[in-house]
Image (cartoon, rainbow, N blue to C red):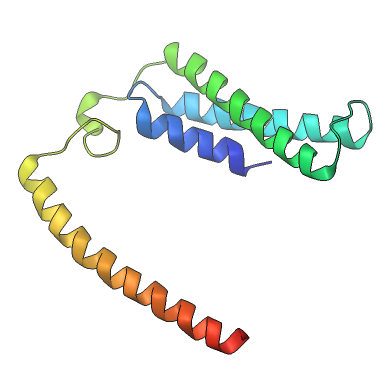
Length: 130
């Protein structure tokens, strides 16, 4: 119930500068409630969506779609976030170039370390399980 609407909220918030907090809140709430409603209607055999795999997929798609529609509509009617608070958070809003270069260098080092750590953990788990 929660995964698709949460993903839709993050996706719209990362891509669209006009997204507001209220849009995210109401979009997430309506997306989850819509997904729950479709699931309950399916379980009660009010609507036939087929197998349980079909139900899961359709419930997720409906929750995703409702979240995006409600988020956009509510955000259009509420005050947008100040542009000064968005650099580096929303796609297409670049932070200070000097800060971006420093962040990129630091991120590169940490992602290499993170990748090595994840690979080491995967090898250890593979040895323990198999």
